[in-house]
Image (cartoon, helix red, strand yellow):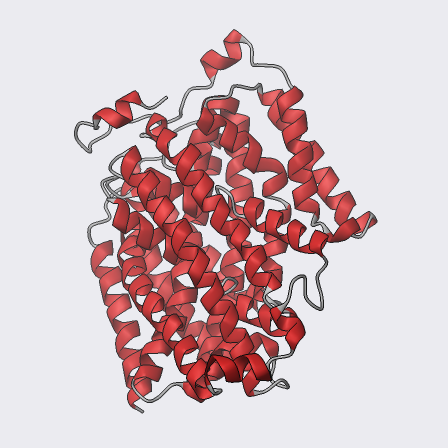
Length: 481
């Protein structure tokens, strides 16, 4: 009972903190990017909490349980991506100090078309990933608290939807910090107690089949591991919640440092969450793989610590769900509704609409979650229509590379068609996901296309540009290209 009491207390703290933060959210800009004044440690915490969702924790343990450490190596593609973003893209975000979304950034290069396409794709991607996290919330409440999956989803998602709807990004950042601290301590504790339970490292190595410790293992080939590595490198590159974290920093230096810390943190975290899958295999090879991490917690953790760790696992999925939920609403309102309206919405109406969209996406994701089988697999599906369209043009825009709107549309069409044909008609040759090949084709078409005309460049100005209210910028920002 004490463990359940700890979990209930934790959920109450998260909800209260989120609601209190929401009382200070009075404009749509506040809802989307808060005050743009956060330092590197806050960016590190909120960015890490955003990407460490059910797929990179529970899903990682599941895949390592089934196929071995090759999945950990593949996930390091994501880690490399974060480091590259920190090195090459984050320092240039000072050029977009007035942007509130990916669409605002894309509009500087591809005008209204780029903004709307970005908004629609961002909405689709975020809804899919929120759905994956919703499914994870239901499973976690079912395993740990004995609640039915629908009731677990109703409670867990109800809390997330409530504080995200009311508080927007301000509530998300505050709760992310709390959730990050809990998960960063709780998940490693599971591995430590699990290894002790199975007889130490020697006992773990002796019990787990040798093929799970080797590369490429019993399921992958070297080509397959490389393809999956590239998939995680490209799949979540510059997705909406991560770009929003690049827009809330007080300086380009803070943004770059926070992003770098997040990428470096992910390397050991992916190893820890994956090795928990091998602990589960040592405990019971017959257990359900998708419950590997929760079952280890139930089996090896002592009272009180068990409650803390359960809170950590709940944090894993809630922190990712709230970030993508907020980004879905911001993308729809800022990048779809605003450019399609002839008459601008009043500020109060815009904020109200953003909250209504957050609520609608959350409810729709609950229905979508009932069809999910594997959390990590749903991420791959979500990537299929993001990477072949957005990664290259968005990165190019941040880097200052100019191309025409026609080039953007042609590259997007080529990338999506390639990804769909590769997956559905060719059945993924060499185990390579279609979105990897689609992103490559997109990049080739985009690079070969011509620069925009003078008239088009003049027309593609950042929409809804506002003066920054964050005070003077530092010299490093003014010097950034």
